[in-house]
Length: 223
Length: 223
DNA sequence: GCAAAAGTGTTAGGTATACACCCATGC
DNA sequence: GCATGGGTGTATACCTAACACTTTTGC
Image (cartoon, rainbow over all chains, first blue to last red; front, top):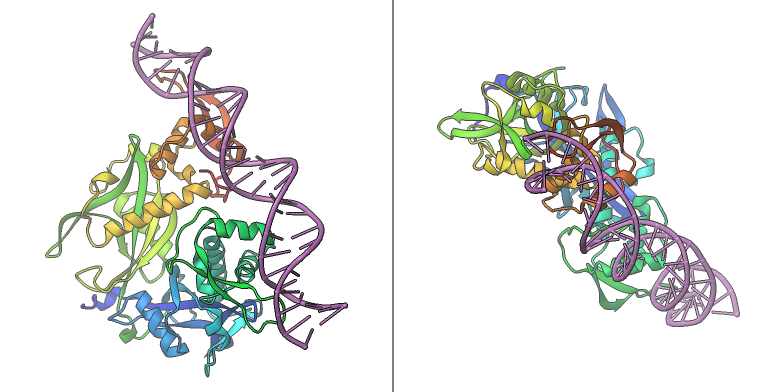
């Protein structure tokens, strides 16, 4: 694929990935330190980078997660493209933002020399326009929780109904009635019992469930 | 704003606007002829163009609609960014696609030397990846119809309940019960009677309604 | 008076909500 | 035996869906 004439290429094409996951029951974002004086010093930002010649934006997101965070097989969904002229104070960069979701078993054992999961409540004053990106990601996640099975990417393959309910409660920011939640989610017929139980917990062990399909499916409203 | 070093700027940043409107009761898209041999000859495509140095993607969309279609004040919403390496066979172009909605009174009297509204059923084999863009736009519109007041951008300022119902039926592709539709839409409290009636129709004149707010508001489900 | 679209209520079935107690396990 | 979270059913209010006839106007 050839490049267009140089005079038409004003902008750098970048991607940023807002990777979210539950760690210790808290919703966290994957960030690393940003230090680009003079405009951005000692700030945190999501992982991102420049799209190269031979890849599309989603492929770039995957590559960058691997290179800058040693993460693979992350669920990705395109969020929004941020193109304001001054969104990066250094020079013109247009960024296609992706939402990334990681299962809690991966996230809680995640260790990396630069990137780490930080509770979203502590993510203030991020570099570039990443605070706005985070808000966009949370809005999208809230919306999708209500009518899709996207929650499966925030849970281990086997999970309890209480864990599933907790994901809903934290993302939707409202408490749900346990009996009604169970009735509803079981009626949707998207999860099933694995036949196994929790082990090594200090209270009554819960039954473990799994999603029937690994796809995100559209549903009549969950909440 | 300075440009980034040339070697990072692989792609051209473009926008394409999928402008939709009702003309004669049919949902139509605004297209013009595309003739870019050898890859694209005698095809139709949505209006689009290159984002320039001093504007963001939404501003570029507005400028291009004005320049290439003499259209202003179009409702715009960012749809999706198309970045496949070969989506434009000539050279690497990343396009931020926008959904544009135009009211039927504007669309039905629209005349332009190159652009025209064509029923979407006749829009086959569009240039570039514009067929995929159209599908994305229709999906988005369907989704938003169900839980927002976005339909206001597809209706004249004053409209009848039957016109409103027809917009829903055509976009959602299913017939709705007249009595139930009226009950539901009035209960949402987003429209009100203007106090005026249709004139010059050859049947019983209908009451005219208008939206209370010019914003797109989120609602509990309409359908 | 006929064609065309406007306008209008009721009923039945299903869904959502509110709510409290017993159970299994580890320590 | 106590602390912790797991698991379960019912009654009511509300909402949804199905359905047909009369009214107003132009011609």
